[in-house]
Image 1 (tube, rainbow, N blue to C red):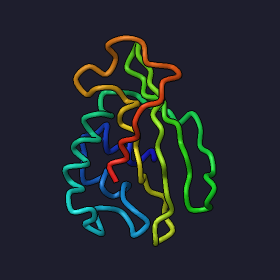
Image 2 (cartoon, rainbow, N blue to C red; image 1 turned 45 degrees about the horizontal axis):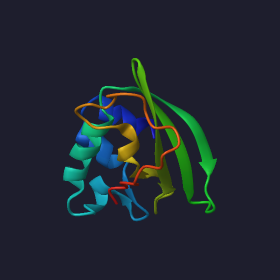
Image 3 (cartoon, helix red, strand yellow; image 1 turned 120 degrees about the vertical axis):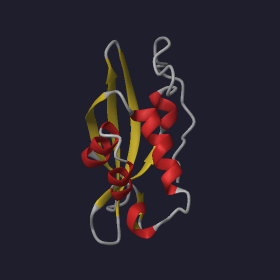
Image 4 (spheres, one colour; image 1 turned 45 degrees about the vertical axis):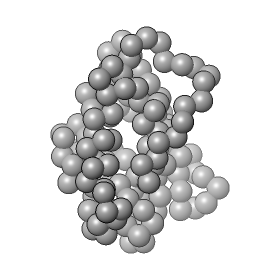
Length: 126
């Protein structure tokens, strides 16, 4: 998770692709999905320009999946963004899903208070 988010902060799409993918492995190694490079650009645009901290890391129902809540801090604006990490075929943990709707718009991530109880659609990009 931290390596993926460091790739976001550094605008290093290749690094992000090493830490995002499916059970088959990182997108950078498997080449899947075929449009993974575009997906890295989209995720980077939603998640950039924010400090982050992992506020929860919970085992999912499966031993190969974890649910994480990441706080994105943009000064006066803080958003909690759900992430799912999975264990890939080589045993490493990689990001599999990111709820980008929770991060706010890339152009105006914090136009007002973040909704507290309203569920956001899940844009897993997967």
